[in-house]
Image (cartoon, rainbow, N blue to C red; front, top):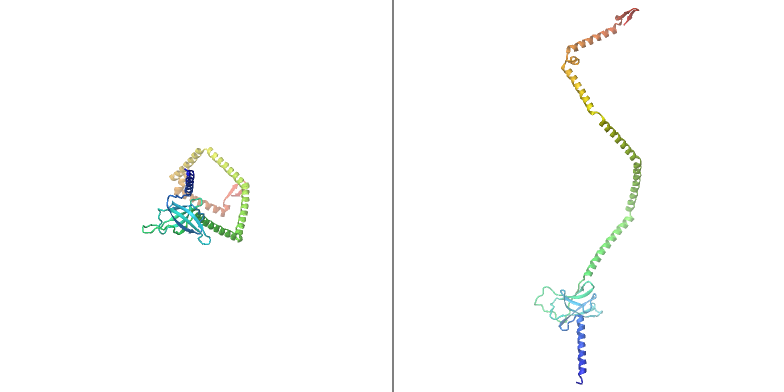
Length: 301
């Protein structure tokens, strides 16, 4: 066996090369034992897409990005090659979408099939170019909305600053500050008057109130000490006497009753008064008629 050692070395080298090739493709996610179909697409901007990026259909990985070619002389400078499992037939109308793969900024390819899929549609041939599109990721969508809100907020702040600038330059702020100064002066005067009132009038009012309360307490004490029962008894006795006097007058038995209810007594008194009046009249007319004799001679009376 002259060449046995060389054969063994050659077989070992071939096995090592096969294992190296298999391991390299395995690390890239390529299954060399599974046949694939290749498709192509062009993009203006890859947004960070790299080779060996995943290819999905409705979130399920079916292949990978094999290569990226670029020619900056064209508008769509980038051409990407993808491979998917051969058992998957892409219907007409399928698009190649560039999407964000996770929150860390990675990119992937999503094959978007038309809906509904009919059986009479012929599948896309191997090696065909697919129409491409770009789908905004979550962070980009939030960034766009955030920028829109920030722009609105900035516009609102600009309007507010312009309004404040107009108020400052106009007379409104000056008049407002003048009114504030006037009100502050009035409050100072009122505070001073209130302090004077608290220092002068309030102690006097409190002293007067204390005096009134003391007098009221004295009156209440006097009322408590007074013999109200005896006073009420005397008042009742006086009322009884008055009632007895009124009863005597009404009974026509006493002097007042006779004077009020007896006409003869009234007429007699009236006649006496008339006679006395006539006597006084005659006395005034003839005073010499009425003389008084004494031991010393005649004396007028």
